[in-house]
Amino acid sequence: MAEHSPSEAVAPPPAELEVWVCHSPAPGEVQEHCLQLPAPATVADALQAAGLAWQEGQACGIWGRVCDAATLLHSGDRVELYRPLTVDPKVARRERFAQQGARRSGLFAKRRANSKAGY
Image (cartoon, rainbow, N blue to C red):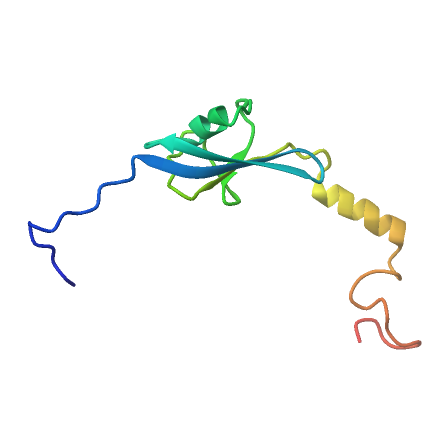
């Protein structure tokens, strides 16, 4: 491991952060805002600078990982504001399966006539 001599200066953190704020106001529509924020900045600062109204309890994240609004940002982060789910994914899958029927979907839907299930 190389050691730094006292004459070598360590680069200071950047004075400004470049972050992207993304949200989807409607299904199939995504809006992105590229922002320059003073360091240190939080997720809440980025959402406010983008003009988005964040409410307590609304989910937000950085690069697809849910985080708190007080999380500090790094340059190059992608802040995402999530819409609440309108339908539980498990319920939607059950309803789709019930409409399709057991014989027309799944891994073994195209099996040979008179063959055993699963082969």
